[in-house]
Length: 237
Image (cartoon, rainbow, N blue to C red):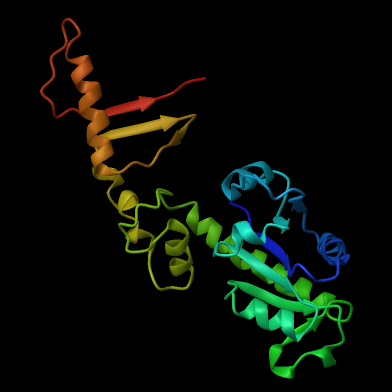
């Protein structure tokens, strides 16, 4: 997983060079940025997981453009919202866009109420960049915790995803021991290792695989199985 931010505009908003300016400022501060722009929305397929795999070795941050329909409710993607006026601001707020890093505009700030906290893109680009970098740093802490979890999204920890648990661990509201597959890993009698990396599995899956393998082995000539044996499945290149 890589920190991901979507640039969201209302349909009527003026096309701007904001994304290019933001990328330039981020690169000046040492971040490698991958920009992914959806040109044709009709029939487009989107997988953030696959995008992250592609970007993992070359980018510190993924910026998305024109993906608002696909990621608006995705809490793993932060949003930077560009609005033209009060009307666009109010329309956007009704959509409950989260997590929202900032709201910005090329329009004069006098066009908005003070409590709207709208940033001016030309004047406040440095501030916007700061918020993006803070998000990346915070998200990397979460991702480092996420890498220590099973990644099965089984929900047995009480959270709806491993990412939610990782964020709770980061905030001190939970511990990695809440992850049931990790907590029970040493009690399982089946271990699967693919390309030198252990694959996390649920206890019931572990038993299905173990008993299936033992069942097949028991049919071999000269093999005696009592059914309590532990097994290890390992792949080799």
